[in-house]
Length: 368
Image 1 (cartoon, rainbow, N blue to C red):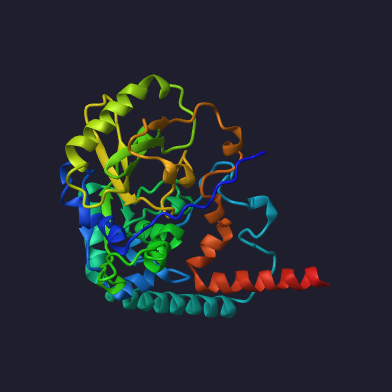
Image 2: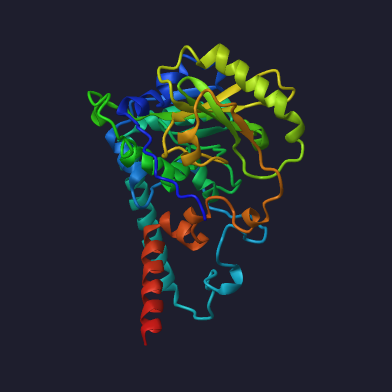
């Protein structure tokens, strides 16, 4: 007979959520955090721009959505399915061609004016993004709590590496994690503690972190309860055979960092923090701090397990112990990916209208 688990409520206050907002802890631990720049407060026009269904990109971005020359693994549709350039055999007269050229130039002028209007509303933010990228070469963005890890499919590199402002805007606009920050950051609050901190008092911020191509195998999530470590989990859920022999090193580095840096300085007793432990294991980087709550990914644990753990228990370090073949059948965050046609159309209102028309025609055919 299987055990029945009672759903355990994990209390979360508004104050705990606010304490995990990046700029509320970054300055305290700056020497342990990868080089970052915080842009705040963000104007309402910028927040609305990020949350829009479609997105206008700056002229100076020179951005084209490309999915590479590989096997199209990030697109559900291949070139052989049709819908290419559509170079037909029909020929029009010269006057028609001239009219088309005039229309095209007019469309470009209108689009340029639209771009100018959009970016004039948050020109200072746009300029700071460009300046930061100019200084550092490339950045990875996030808002107060979340990085757009679920939207890397929209960039050619399939990473969060941004080499121009357009990359930043595309990543943020395509991310469900970022949209959660904007609209639902306090939805999981269960207690009245800290209610004096209203959502309207929380300033949204854009964090630009200098791009470093880190080894995902050496990122770990640490769960803290009553100011004690109750669990450590590998973050990247792939199997790495070299991690098992490093268990004692991982424990020692995490425990030392927690005791010397976080234990007496972070304002909450319950929280989750992420660290990166690069070789030769002489430095621990603090990547993020999150609430000890179900809104945070529990990785190789379950939240039921974590809710039952006590600081008196010997904590467990969990690693992926074998190749997870099922995991490789589906790429991470595929629930957030869309066909290339939709990505292209989202950057062009005329293309979006044409795509909608084609979709409607397909639906009508299916109903016959």
